[in-house]
Image (spheres, rainbow, N blue to C red):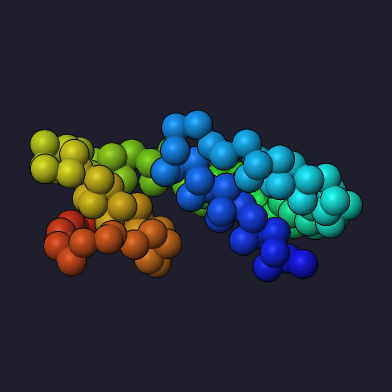
Length: 134
């Protein structure tokens, strides 16, 4: 039955693309076919709605998990850096603020150096040799 439904839709599509005014007998046949198979189409629509509801729920769940991860990451980062470390990061990164990337790579590398581990990664292969100023 599913194949028949799509055949009728294809016939209707071709009829509409060939003629500005579709064949009335063809249109009547399509309407009759759709009314005869209304229950089948309703079931298909309900299946699609369940799938879309599941996808929507999954998307919302992933968004909530990502948001929670970001909030905890921010809280952990805030707890890791004190005022002296923040000043140290700024003193290391500020000389590079006029670079083509606005000093982004230097800032990321400065944070990693101050923390003593590579918490963040720089996407490009250019690394700056910054010295920690004490």
